[in-house]
Image 1 (cartoon, one colour):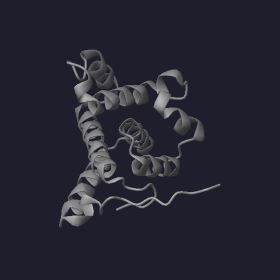
Image 2 (cartoon, helix red, strand yellow):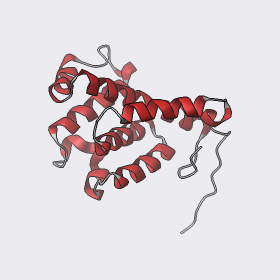
Image 3 (spheres, helix red, strand yellow):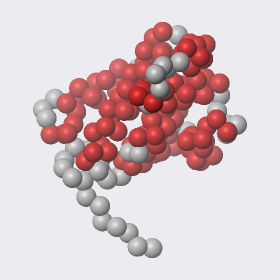
Image 4 (tube, helix red, strand yellow):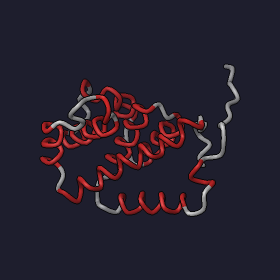
Length: 156
């Protein structure tokens, strides 16, 4: 097996500017403290990262999901969750919301009422707030890592 040496274009922006890493870490900590299950957060982060093509976050998200108890079956099918039987209705609602929030520009009604209604059936307002912040934070990580070609497994 041949491996390719990869290198990021620059250091990660979150590590370059004073206070940014800490601020993002604070956002992650507050969002995690809202009570959403870690496996759900890991799946949402992984799905968002797959959509955005962020190798670093797919790698880290897979590692975090395994640490949260996720199975290889579910990890292998999170990108095609609609056709996989291993996800709960709440997880499906969260993944659907994550897809719509990640792809805001893809449709005039970025988050249709049906997607929102499904999410509200499973999550109260504080949980929805945490879920939306988690989706936004996952997108933030992706949008920092993809342009600089952050190499999977290298962190920042």
